[in-house]
Amino acid sequence: METPPDGPAAGYGSFHQQYWLDGRIVAVGVVDILPTCVSSVYLYYHPDFASLSLGSYSALREVAFTRQLQKQSPKLCFYYLGFYIHSCNKMRYKGQYQPSDLLCPETYVFVPIECCIPSLEQTHYARFNQDPDAGDTHVLKDLGRALVLYRRTVMPYAAYARKRKCSNDEMEVAQYAGLVGQVCAERILLYRA
Image 1: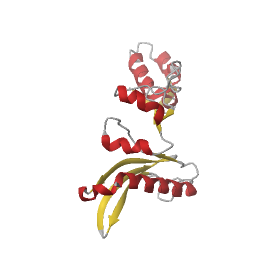
Image 2: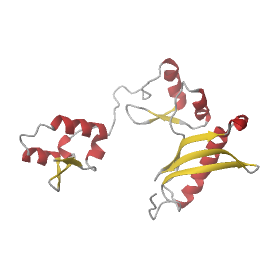
Image 3: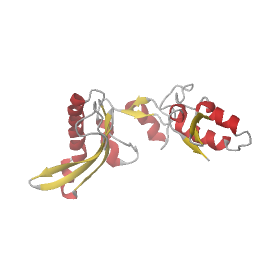
């Protein structure tokens, strides 16, 4: 658990929220408290209480919890309902909350769920951003700026490649940097022996 000075009093990390009724625990929700959001990870409940729509109830409680945390940490202002699998009936309730957005898996921009549903009705995987020219804004643009830790020295990949002219790991480094994206490639050190 991490507790930065401008964060919520409980800190960041994974937490369990218990739901009790008449002295019995009826459900447990797992949430991640992150710098800008509360992310609903999972909810499990006692099957005897299925008629109470505990998934919907817990979502409303988590929205209230997010608003409470925002008073302590103004940047913490988003609530994520976690994964949405359209073909899973137990997840359909997530689309009932408005406004509700889904993250485009190709461009990483949020798109209103009502624009996504028609595509999901036709196929299990869909690009939600309808702009054919849009792409991932964090895509790798300059491999030379990826950070490398080589012989206890931090350097950009371009400097490492000059030092190791005979090195044959460019494809491997390019694959790594392509997966993490430009921003992370310039922040994370890739160890090279």
